[in-house]
Image (cartoon, rainbow, N blue to C red; front, top):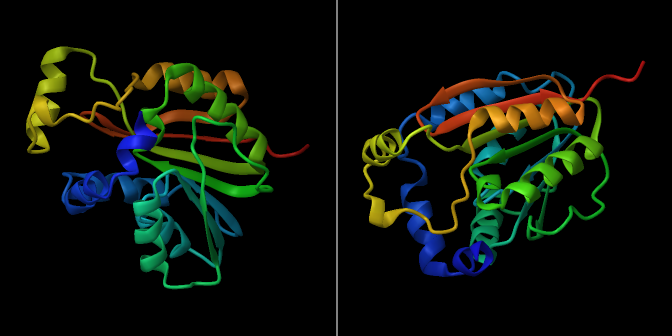
Length: 211
């Protein structure tokens, strides 16, 4: 189970030792930041890890942030990153469970976390995110998605410098377009795949503004 794996200090540190070196990751993050609306005041980061993406989003404007993660080692790393920053609240929560009552947000983001969930839970979470957004709010998910073929999957693994034996057993990747369709069905506007490199993709949509 993902919670058990990511609760391991060794497993978490192995990921963190590689996180900054994944090819093209920074390109996807820059694409995500382009969508953060001016004037956003509150952001939720799902599967915040060591707070990498949350820190980038907070750097885009005067916002307050909430980061949730199931992994205690990751939350400790995030706490170290933010060093007691009063703008940031970090909470332990397993995304296999419904989101707790956290209030409303102008932006909800996630980075390489939701793909660990089973497909029915992914879709349910997208609905919970829609409900948690303020009208006009943004959901942006920089995600690990499925390749359309085994050959392309192997090419991706090689491109990030890993082997099939090193694949994370908790991965439950899903293709881009199924997820984009879900976002549209749930009511998100402008839902699309806005950036993609092999099995890394930016999926984003906006909750309609109040009439």
